Length: 194
Image (cartoon, rainbow, N blue to C red; front, side, top):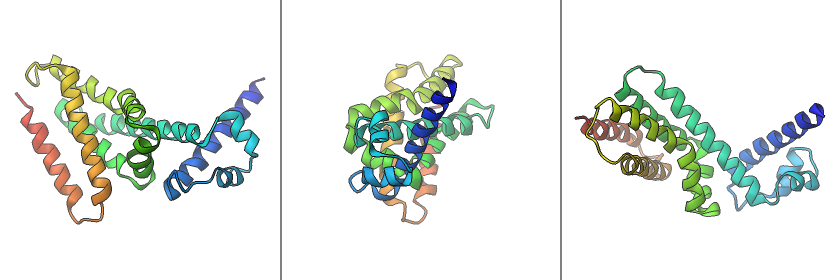
């Protein structure tokens, strides 16, 4: 029984990894399920056994990307003991991870377009936004900035980070734009200090 579960998990992981590569390279619209099936060395029936449709497979891939980005945010933020530096490093890590080639198209372009903003926002809320809210809550509890409604502040900052990542996804060829963005991020966060 354990062997079957392990084999199933391995098959699903393989499908997700192959699909992620295809969605990254070709985009959702130009990715053929047949190509994923062929590269994963599986049958179409095996894919449909685990996923009802290409769209559901894409949703799982996007969830995987969102989870990875959140893990990166947490890892980068934990590099410092200073709460302000943690906030900056976490916000910076989110932007940097979101605009990486392997994440950008899936997370910023096709994700909202294919699944809708509501689904996309729920995933963001469960991953990166959750971490942001936790960090802001800790900082507020320690008196690092004025008492303001935590949910509103979380959505405000998260919205700014998401919009910045969307903008950078289209501006990535412009020289110095990433450095300039990080300077603005530092200035903005500095402005929150009490």
